[in-house]
Image 1 (cartoon, rainbow, N blue to C red):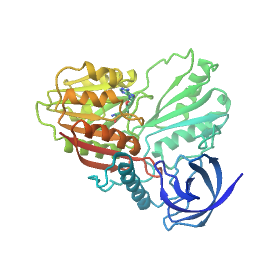
Image 2: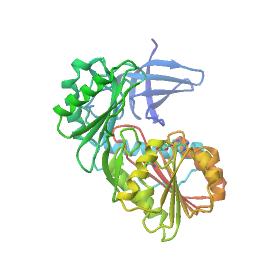
Image 3: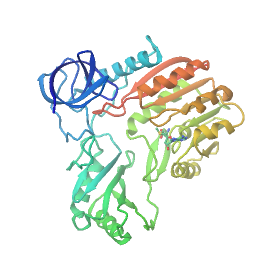
Amino acid sequence: MEELLLEIHGIAQGGDGVGRLDGMVVFVTGALPGEVVHIRVSERRQTYIRGTVLEVVTPAPDRIAPITSDDGHAAWQHVAYPAQLRLKEQIVREQLAKLAGLETPPLAPIIPAPQPWGYRNTARLHVAGTRIGYHYSGSRQVADLASDPLLLPVLNTALAGLREVLPPFKQAIEGVTLRASASYGYAIALLHGHANTSPADLADLGAAWMAHTPNLAGVAAEAPGYVQPTPVHLHDDLGGVTFMLSPESFFQVNTPQAERMLDLIGQELDLQPGERLLDAYSGVGSFALPLAKGLDAVVAVEENPTAVADGVRCLPFNGITNVEFVRGAAERVLPQLEGQFDAAILDPPRRGCHPAVIEELARLAPTRLAYISCHPGILARDLGAMLRIGYRLDLVQPIDLFPQTPHIECVVVLRK
Ligand SMILES: C[S@@+](CC[C@H](N)C(=O)[O-])C[C@H]1O[C@@H](n2cnc3c(N)ncnc32)[C@H](O)[C@@H]1O
């Protein structure tokens, strides 16, 4: 394997350090700007090289000692928190300049997380025999993880409980999803069985785990032939609304920061009594439901049937009567929507908005748009399209939802 000594001068979208060798860009996982590193080359292409750090020869002043597994799930744990924030702002600024031609965007300083550790309310862990943890990055091997300091403490209690009861059932599951309620302090779980796991084993493992672990309120399972005897749900609050979530529905992983994001969206959209709001890619309605008060109507468009069912279920017990969920892909549903909207929220998955969704905005005519993005490069692409149909970019607000990782969330506000 080829090895190199390299000076790192930049940071790439995705969190790798960037250096240069004979005019070629070199992306180095685990390296920071200002460092000299000894690397192993893992991939060599015509235009770029990729590598990983073997030794940090000259460390950056922002480098600190990692505290959890090096499997990659906390890929920036070696970066002091203030420097993580600085690097995230830098990535957003560079991506907007490079991909959307925006040299002086209205970029606000990133909103830091109040808890840089112990914030995650959900985790999807893999199980291999008695090993429980995340996959090593770029591999299918499970990194055994006794506890994860990124998670809310109640999830680490649940994880410890699973370790205790798993041995007799170690062939039964390939993974587990853990979810915690930040508001009510309890957890639920979803066991992912193998194709040939007997339903009885899944039921027995769930029962043993719950008997062993305080604050584990329910264990669901999925495997061919398994029928869930009683539905398992998790209550959590956001923006004054109580949600009742199925284990597989999307919900923002950092509840306190989601609350701030929601406040920001509400403030920027400045919704007035009697207006109509469109929430595309709505999930369970994390934004649509808290913002619905006083509006004429809210239309929430979401593809995932479980998320829609969760959203619809919690309308009556929150006394909400003006939100309609429409199930389906946004690119197919939006062309069928009638009437116009005063404001719209777009919170697509990582791949961004389908071009048809942006085209439809011209007809649906919302005067204020909040676009929530978890990928600055894709954000830059979609922004270009929105500027072309007549919107003006008023705010790019990064908000740190994922401390200790290079993931970057931004709320972008556009107006006609
Ligand atoms: C980033 S999540 C945002 C969910 C929600 N806004 C929230 O904050 O909880 C993206 C959501 O888009 C949904 N989704 C993915 N592709 C979609 C599509 N083509 N049309 C509609 N919804 C889609 C996913 O199921 C997921 O719930």
